[in-house]
Length: 170
Image 1: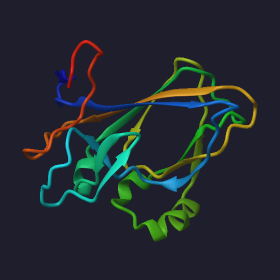
Image 2: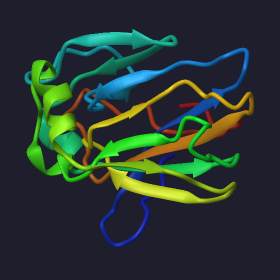
Image 3: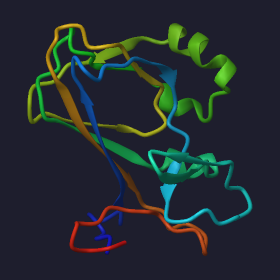
Image 4: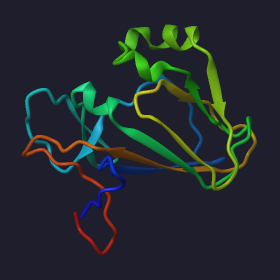
């Protein structure tokens, strides 16, 4: 069961644990998050295409849903400059859905910020912000729990996958 949070009725709709280490290290170029995680692949006008990521069903919704979402990043480790901090293009969340072919040019035209963090820091940002990250270079670990929140219900029969505890099946 998803609990509503706060006066806006937002609720957690997805959580991802990123765990960069010497054995598992990657870089991501500039991009916008454009998909949501749903329970089942169900055709609904305006939603698509569907993809599968790590066994979970994702779909690209109308971008207005992404624009109303908020993402929290909970840092489980220190994230200094040499440990692959999240890079954000400031103000890019106000530009709407940016064509993939224009992402790099727009990111280059905006001021960027490296989101340095201490263990237990929490960063909040608008989900559609342009962001990137480099490979970790210090040999340390960089674990971040990312939780996406949304105030929206999806049109039936589409449903958020949501977040559940091991004893509470979805």
